[in-house]
Length: 373
Image 1 (cartoon, rainbow, N blue to C red):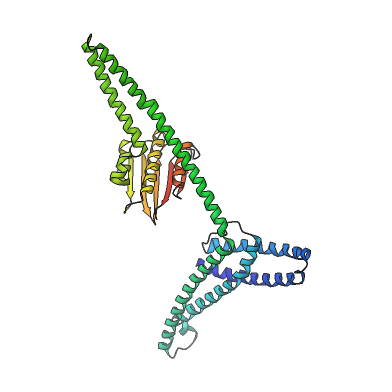
Image 2: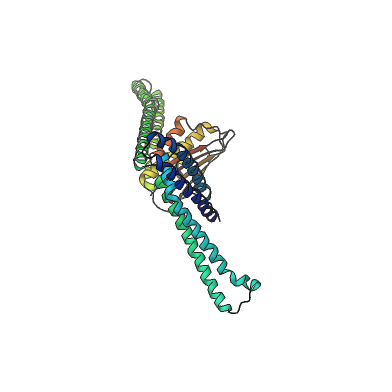
């Protein structure tokens, strides 16, 4: 139904565009060799072209689901209108064929009310032909919509050079953001090693030194110090494993993304419900980014959200991996903060999309979509 309205409205605008092209051409013809006069005529012509192009954009967006970038050149708008009006009239022809086919196909149901039918088998055969014409017209309507899409993108879409420049700028930005994330991770690892593991190793060395000095004079005190040293070595080993896990978990390489996410759920102090619906192996880079997205999001919830439970959903649809982390905390998460902005940078490095929905009072939903093709 929307397609029919879109083609019908496009046929009406095609008439306006044809008239605009004819009147604009006739107005420009006498002043082509006069620059000042040409500029004076081009101003109203350009204004009309912009208005008609805005109308076409609205029709394509609301009736045909064709989204276009908002910026275009005035010259491109005029060229687009000059090239589109034949396509609009073609849409009118398709609609006419569809209406004729529908009327012919359904004549067998209402024809006996308006006339005498002397050859019912001939009418039935004609109805079959009418429905076949309706089918062809429907296919033709889809073809016209595809042509509308291609024509609009060719004239009103970004130029190839502009698209390349935008892509280069996007890649440069994502590369800089990834480098910032890497530097932040390195500084955090250095801080964890210096403030955590290194301090415990220093304490361990001091305990062993004291035990060694007391071994001859007070064996019981030396044994107690050795027991403390053993406990300190256990804590140092646990912290070292924690740091190594945050750098890159071995289970991700050995068991895959699902096993790594299950390990994140088991290590979390809050209950985590994990839903995993991925039916095939994923690229290593996608698995790594998805793991760190979930791991960092769960860590942020534990530290800042005041939540009682966490829900993690990982699904694969249409060659895109969707990661969703939801908590029942207080909300109000700042998407521009260092933690969430780092997750956005990780997703952007794979041309993914990242969003945070965290109204005051909760719940907070962190979403990421990563292409897997």
